[in-house]
Amino acid sequence: MKKLIKITIESIKAVHAYKLRTFFCILSVALGVSSISIIVAAVEGTFKQAFDMVNKFGPDALLIIGGGEEARAFEFRAKTITVEDVEALRQSFPGAYSVMPMTFDMNVQVSYKDKKYIVRLIGATQEFTSSWAWYVTDGFDFTKADIDEQRNTCIMGSHVAKELFPQESPVGKYILIKQIPMLVIGILSSRGITPAGENLDDRVVIPITTSMRKIQNETKYVNIVRMRFYDQSKLKYYEKDVFSFFRQRHNIPQGDPDDISIISSKMIYTFLAALTGSLVMFLGTTGIISLIVAGFVLANLLLLSVNERAKEIGIRRAIGARKIDIMFQFIGESVIVTSAGGVIGYAISLAVSEFLTRAANFPIYFSYKPFFAGLSLAWIVGILAGLQPARKAADINPIEAIRK
Image 1 (cartoon, rainbow, N blue to C red):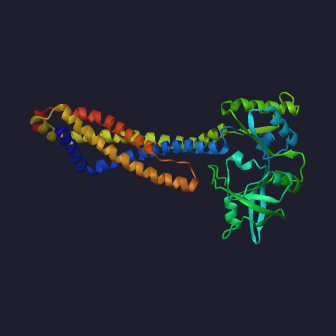
Image 2: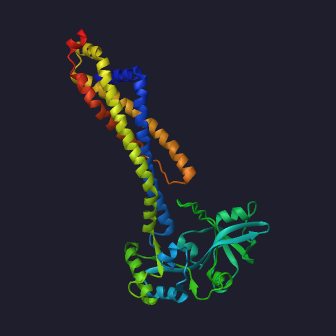
Image 3: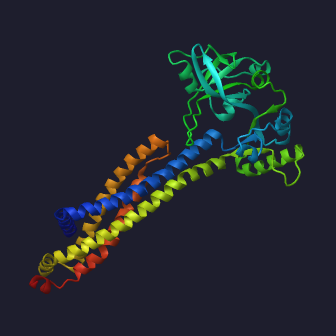
């Protein structure tokens, strides 16, 4: 143990003695480790955010949207789902414990006194908050009477509330939606911004009957149906069955495209994986190249160091140092340098991740994993880079080294 401590002390002295060499080695390792750490943190953050989003969306949920993929590609929202379709879904899928129709209007202006704001207007039933697990934090939820009687009531997102009512509570106040007075009865809990930059708190929800009759002037079609199932393990089979249900019910010929599209939780994982893919490719390549370069730089500088310190090594061998002691010293120097680079690289990754989070709202989550992943790679580079110089140093003939 004493010998190991002494070897470590000698390694630290050598690292300190060759400051310029140490600086360049640490810099190379730090750049590589910071890239790797950000990748690990980004992947971990992606999965964490994906799980959070799936929990909010509902791991047992399907969102059925009127209009097929072709219509969505051209941003055309065809109305293909009828009120009768919704009732038929309830009858045909006893495995669904919730079937909720919704209407949807983009860029609707709401106003209160002299304040105006553009929102996404949703028409829904009294199941909205329970179906989305998105509960009212101030005021009251819809009742069945609100839906049946087409009442002019609304629940608004927290961001809309702050925009229209910065100094007072909106509950009990009237706002104008397309010049129709609506009584604010509740405020939804805050859900923040998605990785795609969509603010989830800029919604206003009104009874679906009010939306259809008074906003859309509609009696037959709804835009969206949200279904939740008892057995989420069969969700992919339910998705296929829903497509088949609408093809059969709407008499769509074989070969023609579907007139609906479906969003499920698996699409959230796919989207977030694609979002991180470009970052992983870029930083992964940068990190690996930096670590390889750092390894070559470190190995070459250690080889030069062996030649410069040949007399020192010869004297140490002459007074009793074993080959293994010399090897451990050089490998120790290499590991100390790469460890310092690993710690600095992790600190750099924290700063860069903070910038990415604020500038691009990118899902990055730091735990012990990025740190240990980066440090482990740094140690591997240090050991591999130090092996050849350490062997060369250990093989030096002490008598010839002292004579020179």
